[in-house]
Structures are given as C-alpha cells and as structure tokens.
Amino acid sequence: MPDPKKPVVVSGMRPTGRLHLGHLHGALANWVRLQADNECFFFSADWHALTTNYHDTSVIKSAEREMFVDFIAAGIDPERATLFVQSEVKEHAELFLLLGMITPVGWLERSPSYKELREQISDRELSLYGFLGYPVLMTADIILYKATRVPVGADQVSHLELCREIVRKFTSHYGEVFPEPQPLLTEAAKVVGTDGRKMSKSYGNAIDLGEDAASTTKKIMGMVTDPARKRRQDVGNPEVCGVFYLHRIYSEAPTVEWVDANCRTAGIGCVDCKRKLLEKLGPDQERLRERREALLARPKDLEELVQLGTTKARAVAARTMAEVRAAMKL
Ligand code: SF4
Image (cartoon, rainbow, N blue to C red; front, side, top):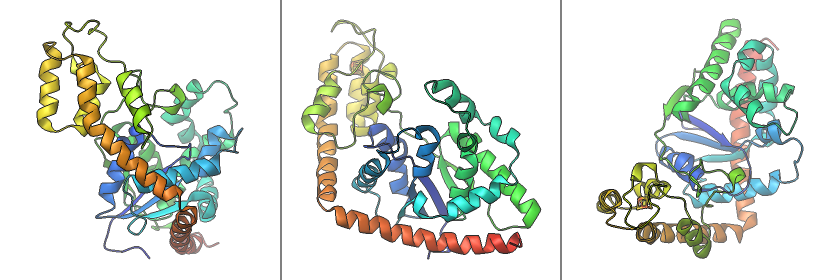
C-alpha cells in the first residue's frame, strides 16, 4: 500500500516505442527526481494510445516493453515507483464510465488538445467518442490513485484544470472522495530534434535514449545549427541552436560559457562545438545503452517487475472504487 505520509504523483506515457532524448529530459528526468519524496505511479497509457492509433494496435505491446525498459534505464526504480499497465487495471474503465455520466460534452469540445489534434491529424477519422472523452479517461487515471500532484509543463495546465473541474463536479454530487490534484509545474529542459523542430519520432528527427555511439555521433554531427553560421567565420547565436540546448543539459558550466562566447565571436566552428558535446553526451548514451541491453536480456524479470507494480496499482484502485461505489450508492 502507498505510504500515506507522502504526496501521490501519477503520470503516464503512451506506448509508442523507444523513447528519445526529448522524453528523457522533458519528463523522465523529472520522474526520477520525484520518486525520492513522493508515492509515484507511472503507467503505460495503452488505452490512450487507442484514441488516435486505433487503426494499428499490433505495435502497442512491443512498444510498451521498450518503454518500460527506457523508464528503468533512465533511473526509475520499480521498488520505489509503481510501474503498471493501464489496461490491466480495469477500474480505470469503470471510473471513466462513471465520470462520463457527469462530464458536460461542452467541456470536452473546448479542450485545447482536442482541437489541436483534430487539426494536426488529418489522415484518419477523429470524430470519435473515445477521442472526445480522452480527458475523462485521463481524469480517471489520475484520481483513481488519489493523486495530489501531477507533473505538467506550463502548456498542459489547462488539461489538468479540466480534470480538476470534473473532480469538483463529482464532489458536488456525491461528496468528497478525491483530492483535487495540483499541477506540479516542471521546467523541462528544452530539447529539439536534429532538424531544429520539436523532437518527435514522427518527424524522423529524434535521437533515441541509449542509441548506439556511431548513430548518436552521426546524428549530432548532422544536426541543424544556427542558419546564420553558413561559413566557419560567420558569428552565430547559440540561443537558436539545438546543439547549444544539449550543451546546457550535458556539459559543465565552463563549457557552456565557452560555447556561448565562442559561437557569438566565431571563435569555434559548429564541428568543434558538436565534438565537445559528444564528449559528455556519448558516454551518457553508452551508459543508457548498456542498461537497456541488460534489461532486454532478462525479459522475464522485466515482466515480473511490471506485474508486481500492476498488482499494487490494482489494490489501490480497488480500494478507491469501493469508496466511489459507496459514495454513489451503487
Ligand atoms: S557553434 Fe555550437 S551553438 Fe553555435 S551555432 Fe554552431 S553548433 Fe550551434
């Protein structure tokens, strides 16, 4: 059972395969820090994957295994944090259904991610009940464990606000079962892809977590830099360069200052700058690669860890649902 003295943190990720450096520095590094002082539940949001990828479900299970390997390789400790699979805790579906009874459709239609994704994804039908109801399922995921804190970036606070509104609606009808989860604002390190756009598998610009040395080197050396630096003697602006963002994450302060000053005066070229970055990023990727390989070599152990976490999550979820049914007189 969770330690009642610790705040409860819940967060999930859709299983889409190998994670990349954007996931590592945008979310996972923060999760690793949070597990020290919080009761953490980190899950594979496999049902959420269906809301937009219902047309191809064949990759979900293998993607999930890769994702859990990446979680642990990045430093999530399954003995401190509970790792589980959403679809294996059926209470998520029950609570989703019950919350759906009290959630106004207008709230969901106004959700910024609903509008954004419908505009972005034009190659498939998204006028779907499951897709519209995505925030209701997300609310169920969070409150089932009575989360008090949810790690979010500044752009996701509105999503959590919808969850909090649903909690308030539930409380007004049936009394207080759930705490209102508070946003745990995280200042995620900025990471962009090799082409300068947001790092994303779908853009083909990602560097995978623990990618091998040759491939990491090739991608870093081919990375787009400040377009103003066409020739070695052109001065640049590190603030518009993805290589510099990575230096901020991987390099020591004196190196970051060295890059900052010498980029602006053309004291170094982009090749020097990238080689310097690889001195730190290369060994880090190698360490992650080794940890991934060790985990992949013991698939049964990995399965057991996730099963243990799922059993623990089920026990907490069952207890909450007993309270929900009592509050709703069901
Ligand atoms: S010197 Fe470094 S920071 Fe400046 S543009 Fe080149 S790669 Fe980017």
